Image 1 (cartoon, rainbow, N blue to C red):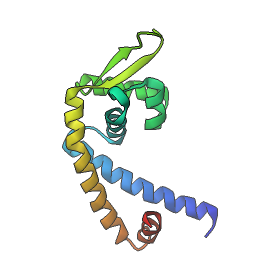
Image 2: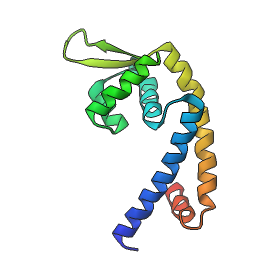
Image 3: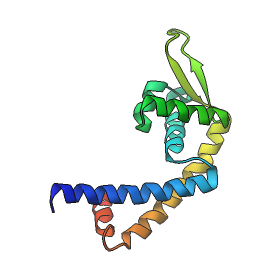
Image 4: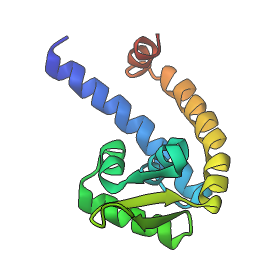
Length: 136
């Protein structure tokens, strides 16, 4: 298999799984993978907060997109922005109590949904063998 073909298959596998997770999270929690990834990172972070630059790296979006994402999470009451006390240029995003509760509800749903998607994809004759290799 060529490198390009391998990349194409990996991209197709990722897209199928990610799109399915995105739809499931949107239906149940009214947010998508980027929001879930941000909440997960904040939930796991010391003191439940990360600098905006750290969050940008974790989520894998550009700074402008992460600013909009954080604004949506703030508007939903799931996070709050805080200015660093020692460096006024530093801005943190901090998970709220409501954000923790939503994440703690979303995380098991995410795991169950991901397992179901994996089971579905493993039955696919084209992508199933690749997923099986990745999971091994």
